[in-house]
Length: 153
Image 1 (cartoon, rainbow, N blue to C red):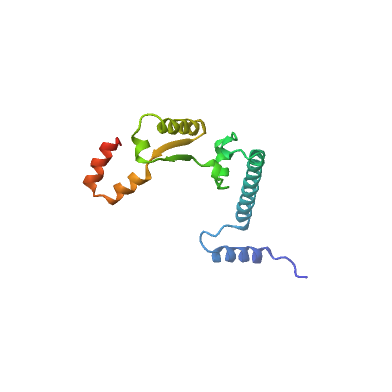
Image 2 (cartoon, rainbow, N blue to C red):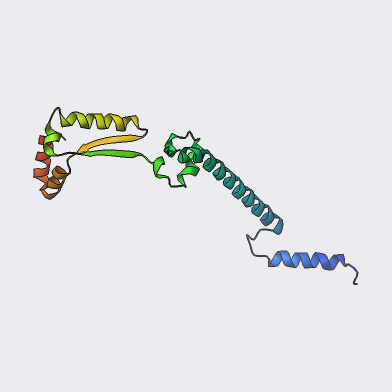
C-alpha cells in the first residue's frame, strides 16, 4: 500500500479539472439534475394518475369527459388522453332547400334540434343545405355571392 501524497493528489485533481470539457457539469451537479428530473417525472405520473382516476367514473357511466370538473392543470393533462368527449361538438342539421327557406313546419324541427344542441355543453348547431353548398362550390364567385345573398347568408 502506497502512502498518500497530498501534492500528487492536488496535481491529479488540477489535471483532471484542466482536461474537463468546458461546460461539462461536475458529477454532483449532474446528480442533482438527474434527481430533479426523476422527481418531476414522478410528480407528473402522480398527477396523470389522479386525473385519470377523476375521469374514470364518468366514462364508466358513459358520460362525456367534459362533464367532469377539472382544474386547468388537470385539463392540460387530460388533453394528452385525446378523449373525443373533451372536444367541442358541432351538431349539423342537413335539410333540403325548401326547409331552409321555410318559416315553419320542418324549420321548427330544426329549431328544436338546435335547442337540444345548445343545452349540451360546448356545442354549436348549424342548419345547412348540403345541395346548396355543393351548387355554390361549383358556381363562379359572382354567382355564389348572389345566391348567398338570396339565401340570407
